[in-house]
Amino acid sequence: MLNNSYIIFLIALCAICHPCHAILILADTATFGQSIDLGLVEYDKLNEASGLAVSHRYTNVLWSHNDSGDESRIYAMSYRGKHLAAFQLKDIEAIDWEDIACGSGPVTQTSYLYIADIGDNKAQRQTKFIYRLLEPEIKESSPKSIVWITQFDQISYQYSDGMRDAESLLIDSKTLDLYIVSKREEQVGLYKLAYPQSLKTINTAEKMATLPFSWAVAGDLSSNSNELLIKTEQEVYYWKKASGDSISTFFKIPNLTTVPYTQELQGEAICWARQSMGYFTVSEEPWRIENNAAHLTFYPRLTLLDINGDDHFDIADILHCFEYIAEIQPLAGMPVAPDINFNNRLSIEELIYGLQMLIQNMNK
Image (cartoon, rainbow, N blue to C red; front, top):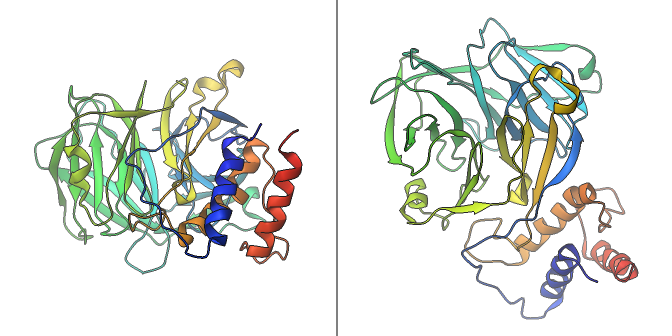
């Protein structure tokens, strides 16, 4: 029987080959599959993962960091949890790092990481910090040692309405505005740090919205800023907006939408996959108890997607879908269209070959 991955492939191929290149208007909802366990986090020093971001510079790379108590370090790992590199920000104390995001920054067409030192369990920290740095280069020798980072920006801020705890950082890669979601209120708040954020004075995070749930522990905006995930301990909430609409549009929808989530032991991290073709979560591994080992989990998208944010599904989106199939579907053990000439792109000829592969596997 043909599964969803094959159906997506066949529909997309038909759309490419159709002479009129018909354009499909997307539905307002997205469908995501159930959890796929990608395995254990390999590196034993990443033992209290509290943030997660997918690399915009590399395929098959995730960034993470520990909760309070670690050095000022970030860790790179593969989608299967294999340790790739560790980097440390020089002369910085990691007070309570709670989230990490990857997105655009001051230099165009350049990928940045944003590290959120925003935790405040007792609401006693007047000033919080977000560190912005170029996404580091990962070399083959990187896993063997800590690589020091000496160049980064420190964005200091205070909330407009008093001290509070938070664990969720969002970057709007279109506007470069930063958003923080508070954690502990009965109805949490969404706060905005408008771009350009000052690097010399303390910024003020202005409250933009109140959200009808509590205990927000992680969040992520899609790379086109049109889809949002916010995670609590029990649920993952999802919003979608049209391209060009402001972030506040997300919260004008009266009803909350949840997407699949298998509750983890102290799961405090979530991020979109590349091209928003699903989302990752990772659990903490408190005290390194063997039965509570930290797992990476993936939830694949099962619907076609307007990747470039023009509110239509067309040829440009289809090509991104095939890149997704090549990158993500091996995690679920699916056959994929191969990049035969190893140029990191999928051509029509390669897609046809991939179709032949799928036909051969249809009845297996």
